[in-house]
Image 1: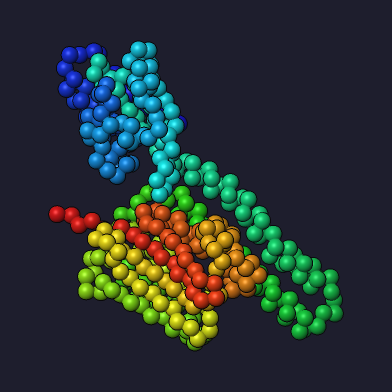
Image 2: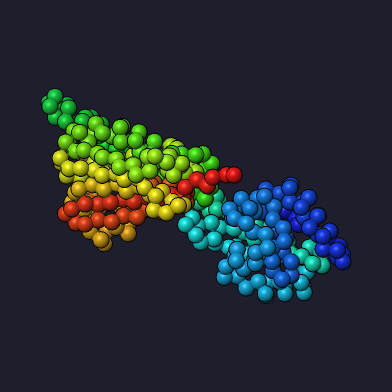
Length: 360
């Protein structure tokens, strides 16, 4: 990607001329544009830059935005040599973002900063690499099984009906397993690519959870399990409203509640609670009574294809991608996912989201 040229006004005694020029020019640029004085304080921000960082930038020190960069040397180099300075910066918060930064002098009083978001390109490259590596590994087993049974059916002339039906049933299950895997990979890839983009819809968590519980209650009943939903903020629906994408939030709770059913004891209870832990966040806990998870496994549960019990997970129809999808969706919504478990007793998945800010 080639950075667009930055305007460079002639030296002037009036710094407001620089500000006016940049205000007009920045409207033509989709990338972030900052104008900084030689005290390294942000004087002007275009709308794209505000959207990139999601916070007020004007009158802040440049070092507050790009931590770890020695801007004294950068500004000396720009002022003395009168040539652009360029670097790549990793923004390390809940969602890792990568920016290409280009800086150059603008007139006698300011330095222009062009901020190009490279996160999408980086995510696409990573998704492509991971997709090839993971798919080749995970599809090898069902494909090998299918090929083996197909060869057997072709080469055996006198195969009995019972054996044929048995082989076809296994082939059917393996093909469905590949379909589930591909669907989950597509879902995960989409979420990873868009993880840095905050969704713009408004979602009521209590409505989502109520609907997902209704959808999965039949599956729980087959194992004589009960699902209870304790909505502690039922009288104040706005306290469960978040900024998000409804389909993705549904996927989060569908995965968590479905896992609670899969790995809970027969005839046990699944407890779901929704509450506010402070004035700015809403928290949902999904707890099942089951075998639990050893502490050494918990940090790795959200890794793609990581399974505590591979045989049981495959038997239950799991792809090993559900919790990875949950983690990336929660990250995209600027939330937090935590997992706690007591071996032999219970496991709790907790998701925490920022409440939608009210506009005056």
